[in-house]
Image (cartoon, helix red, strand yellow):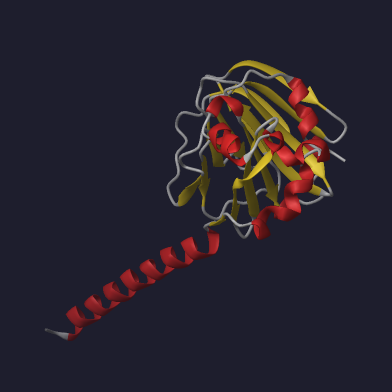
Length: 238
């Protein structure tokens, strides 16, 4: 084998090794770690109204921790605290008794002004898919797809043209919408849609952006139980 061939093989080998190292490092740095223990979500339980905290099924709580964000999911079961352990187990198995609630904190968007976030409706979002990335809560009613290395200096919330019965909601330190949602995406100032959420298109979803404790949260609530805007009372927006 001549020297040129050896150099080509060595160069090609170095490129392959470098490529593999890059992908491993990219996944290690940007992927989320899932936790189901109390330590990870306990500091966020205060986001629920104190009057209903005892009805939050913390046994099913899970937290996805990334270097840019923390995604927490809880099941709120009205009246859960009044049941004995056997009855609680039965209620947890019944989907039509549960509200699925998520709090999503973005570390890099602390103090981000709520008025700077735009909502865009009736968008074509069918083409969106994750190349290099991951899916949070893949078996839930709202799997979240995230591209590795996303960055938001500005953020726009987009709702697709398959969503229905949408109504805007505004509060002192939150705003959002609720309706029968199909797909929602987050895009940056470059119109890059690096995060999107797919919903099971059978029931209403409450979708909020909120400033709480100087942090920016995406809050979602969905359920097979029929509900209206009064469900806002389970959240402590102070």
